Length: 452
Image 1 (spheres, rainbow, N blue to C red):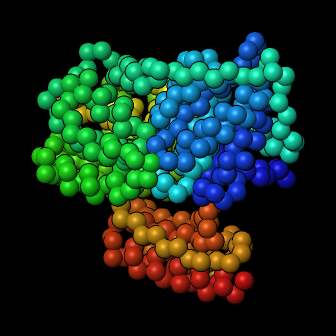
Image 2 (tube, rainbow, N blue to C red; image 1 turned 60 degrees about the vertical axis):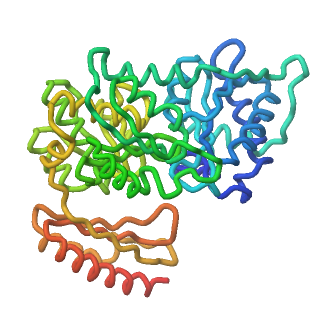
Image 3 (spheres, one colour; image 1 turned 90 degrees about the vertical axis):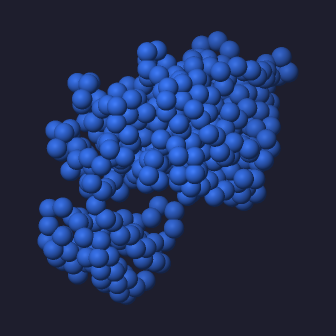
């Protein structure tokens, strides 16, 4: 059986500030453990880049990590507030042995977490995460005074990343004439995203750009797009773009106020690449990707596969197949031929490039993909349950799928964060989908209640 990690999840370490392990003493030890592991990576004097989002606890954890890393004899570079994908990029270009991001992504300010990147700007290999966790079992020791790590600050981090983002759409492409609303969720894109789109020629109305340490993701950004919808309509903008707190997710809004999710953005990008005869292999989605995406890609003769939910699994499937495009409905999109991780700004730029290249508004491009209605019901379960072994549930799933036909599907998925089983039904008729989801969830609740 594969060993389980004590602290690292699918996207680093995350939790509530002040509750272990999201405490200053743990962060100091984590910095030291990572420093000791990465002190053995590469040649010469090693260095680790540390960035953060805008939540108030980031300053506290930045200081703790700095103390731990330097005590281990590794230099650090501080970037200040920067999007998570920017740290992946800068880790690579600054030739650091690793990058650390202090962020809880789309969560509220009460939470925080740590994400690591390798020297190549990718998520850490399992063996490195296990090595860090092993070091966490040791006492913190400080190298001799002459070997203590030094700290410096990269003062042009924002400018470097802005130029990189602009370079991904080519020097000849301009967004002149486009009026865009950009919602930065009071997060780490607040001083970057508006500049990127403005410097490419768009007229930008920026919202969610006044972080105070407490308002990150608060009623704004990709997880709460209603403010963006209202602003796009009020400004009569061509479209809106919303990021989450650390900038690795993006959701868009068309000029009519319709929300455009990650599945639709993936389709727009894939369609434009197919139109330009760019070979990107295929598209990797997840178990939650809308069936409408799969059907629309099939019409374009673009291969599509599903990975388990989580960007780590999407990335692994892309690497295994040698494909360049993948992502999740949440707006976490990976363009692997451009950068090494999910990047909200770069994904938005690719979608905008498709709009300019086709000369069509976003609403017209997304209309070519028909999203099918989905209904999700969370069923509380006290213990781990074996879905495949329950004959009554499996028979009911088969029956529902036969009633839905080829343009429908059923997904039963245990939550990775809470004691619930997610029952999802997808099909062509919303009323039918809701009814079948309700019936199936009631059976699931009855069957698994008897096992608890």
